[in-house]
Amino acid sequence: MDFLYYLVTSIPFFIRAAAVTVELTATALAMGMVIGLVFALMKISGRRFWRCIADTYITVIRGTPLIVQLFAIYFGLATIVDFGSFWSAAIALAVHNGAYIAEIFRGGIQSIDRGQMEAARSLGMSYGLAMRRVILPQAFKRVVPPLGNQFIIGLKDSSLAAFVTMKELFGVSMQLASTHFAELQFYTIAGLYYLVLVVLFTFLVNRLERRLKIES
Amino acid sequence: MSLVKVRNLNKWFGRLHALKDVNLEVREGEVAVLIGASGSGKSTLLRCLNFLEQPEQGQVIFDGKVIDPRRDDLNLLRREVGMVFQHFNLFPHMSVLENIIEAPVMVKKVPRGKAIEEALALLHKVGLADKVDAYPCQLSGGQQQRVAIARALAMHPRLMLFDEPTSALDPELVGEVLAVMKQLAREGMTMIVVTHEMGFAREVADRVIFMDEGRIVEEGEPARVFSRPQKSRTRDFLSRVL
Image (tube, rainbow over all chains, first blue to last red; front, side, top):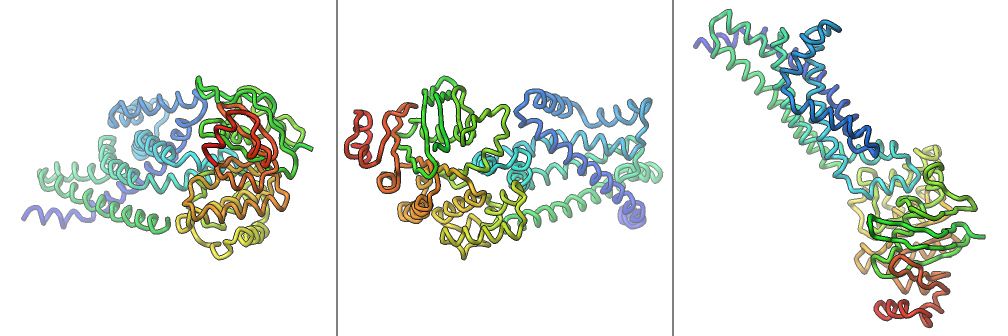
């Protein structure tokens, strides 16, 4: 019965915290998409220099834990630039997810038939124009499922922001759990909120996928 | 006067010597048909003419100007050289109309209204006026290829390259595409066509060029090449396909 009591009375705290989680995740993933696209284009570039930079970025970021990256930015960079907890977390999440999103975009772009680029170029379109008008719109449709998957991971990974004092879902649940000595209840409640967000998001992605399928 | 000229062209794919000292000249208004077994270099030669492939040696001269792929803006050359592919390569996320107006609007900055007007005229010409708003996946192969021809023509090219335009089509759809190409030839378009359709070559070509193992082996008027081939390799090839 404790559980239901806590669940109901904590609603105002958790709603506010959920809003922070969503804001943080949305900001981070929006930046992550831009980073991902830029590095994907570098990775398929004809110039070795750009490919090398993209490879290094992807290897380093995928090869180290998010919490290490987050602490490096929040505590480590604090002596040079202080981003504050929100932007530290957003940047860390963006840079981290950007590496995975880059690989998703690269796969999507390379899955488009070579003939599409050739047809566009044969009409006098520049590489950039062909990419923007012909290749990317088709690639984007194909990457919606893996991208949705990555967004779900990003949403859950945003919980690590609690360790740089963010009052998002996990941060708030840690606080409430310790003040009420009710760990099981509050962490279960936090889990429920994450679950609801993920289910909601999955529903939206499925709808988008269906709409794209009808269009083509 | 020659619209396009190729001088001592050589192309390698790794260790494969795909084009060996190819020389070719196509006059304005001429229809040249390239024939030969698969792997003989016909498509590679065609793709070198708009630099979808970069030849390692030799020159491509378009309208009297030597094209240097490292220095010249190839996009300017490609505006004047249309290409039709074996697999059509229409843009699947765009309607038929959007496919046709895309390059004129985005590359040549033709006003949208004018581009649409021209696109409709071109669709009428290839017999697909009723398919303006259809998407490529809703069309048969023959219809897709006719849209692809209209798309290339929308740039007002001075030269049209056809890379086995009917090879991916069901036999009953080949005729409609060839009919459009014949009409184009009659209107005086300069065309270089890679094809296995010997009937088309015989009927439409001003000149037939036979290639084998990366070389031009024999060329001449179709009546002469088909009935009295000079080289034994041409005879062998023709006896197999005719």
